[in-house]
Length: 197
Image 1 (cartoon, helix red, strand yellow):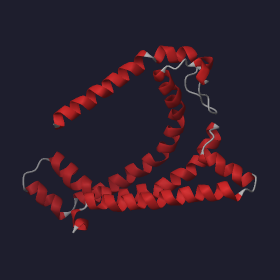
Image 2 (image 1 turned 45 degrees about the horizontal axis):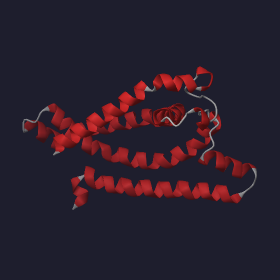
Image 3 (image 1 turned 180 degrees about the horizontal axis):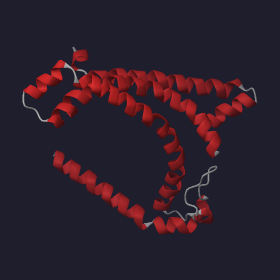
Image 4 (image 1 turned 90 degrees about the horizontal axis):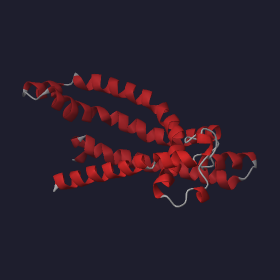
């Protein structure tokens, strides 16, 4: 059953990508000024030019998210890699890693199943805290890219001294922080068997 599900998902993904690649030329034909990825503002193609093509609409929606997504994710990657490296170096010197090696387990099993799993516990905490900071960074990113999103609403609320959007932004950011910390606590139970008891 697992093989059937895996095969179905793999072929479904391949068919999806095949359809996207077949419609890339059509997307370039209707893209404004021959620039498929807009750098400033919501540069999506107007819906009347798309003629109802589902695949070109997916391109239209997706390529406008590439640059803001890269900007928001690159901020955290360096920090996560440093934390992971430091946590792995500390975990590798523990007694249970030496015990696992003395049992004859391969290095791959020792590092992935034993060391990395325990090294991810502090990283889980950092990821939960960074999610609320990601919403704060979206204010700057949306300003730079000219997007109208949650950050732009927050900024406009500050400029017009309107407390409604500002309070809504803080409510969403605070709720996201609480939700992510709850998910981090649930993830601790999967990562560390001592917490399950």
